[in-house]
Image (cartoon, rainbow, N blue to C red):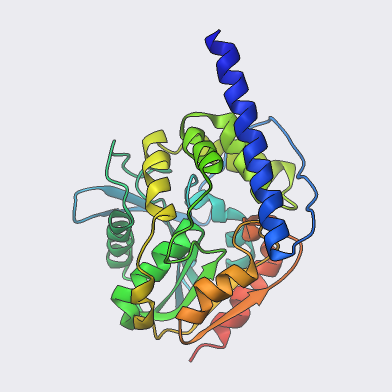
Length: 311
């Protein structure tokens, strides 16, 4: 009886999630997106031969693992989003690694190789993680890039430390005003904290052209994130409420988006771009929410062009 009820609930959540994507596509005028390839295989992601692993200690005594790739003159800090670790950036790192950058890629608390406390996942605690990594790495006049929830964190960090930044890059960012979900979809996202099949579903419906190996790697990464971190941080980013602080950001800002079924260009223009004075929204087609996983070459080209144009 319990098994049957559980299966019914999962199916209901899947239908709700798919309905959400279709409904949002209708709202913003996006066409139907092809379903990504599905695979059940698991592929482990490595640190990479060129990466140096370090640990930073936060003000609240958490150990935050981060990778440093390269020793170029421009520091770039890459902040990951919800339900993944810094490993989500591996495709982008391959495209950007070279003589120009020193890439600094943390695993936020609860994910990857960092401390996994049983509680304490508001946005402000994640800011402590970024502060610790910036200090420990000696990052200076750096470009801060964030994706999804990490995009919300990058905005919040910039409202506090705008003078540290040379540039700000927001990739499919959660707006500073949050991203409330309809009840059925919220239930799906909440349940995904404890159900790897639902994590895989969320990756699928958020993507447009993700390759099987990349899907498997993301699914494996998500399964290693502390369930309580996934569950608690969900409330943090859906309920974000600091839009009134965005006027403090003077840093030149790139808002990068593709055919994301959630964070689409009109939404991000209104909820982010119009509130950050020195910002631009750039769109390129063919990938979804995880644009730098699905199309790392185009993503890297946009980032390179933006960074090279900074004063």
